[in-house]
Image (tube, rainbow, N blue to C red; front, side, top):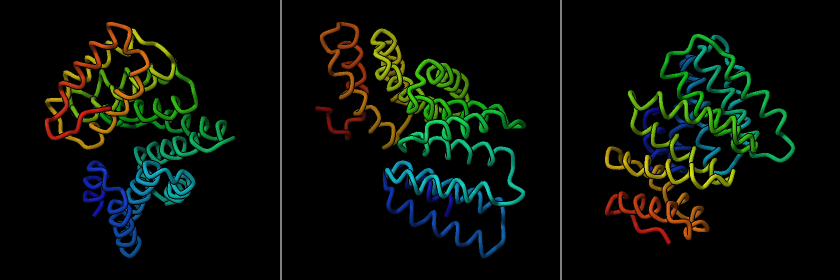
Length: 231
């Protein structure tokens, strides 16, 4: 049920992902399986965040952190989920930063885990408007994680572009948009397609800049044929 939750989440079916995540949690609680409980809380926090229910995302992450005997990677991930959810709640910036720092300070992660954590913490820092640090972490994540997951690489490239757009850095945006465009033929993800449309809309205000216009055209041209064009 946990794996089904991730598939539904990536397909953008968030209500269904929330239901299957709840089933995964119920089964883990019945089995008294602590690691599965933490994993279920993590997935429910993730889904809640993407549904826009940030307070619920905080609650699930906090409950996950209260589960005994969780692994280092689960501790890091749940702190990251907590920090990212708090980052989107007014007047919770300091608490968000504390949680994100705790996530980064957890040791014993695999190289893949460290790369993914860097990218996810970078996303949280971007919401806190810590654009330079966020961009650095997202760049490290995108550079390192491609050897394991083209999907994760595309996600972090997309987030890096969105961070640069918020920081008003059009030259860097154009370079990263072209890089993202080159990665699209190798993945199939509703979440990535949605992010591409968000980038195309957000970058429209710079369309008079030739390098941005060319990068936008390149990115649009690499979308899957079944994906409707951006307005």
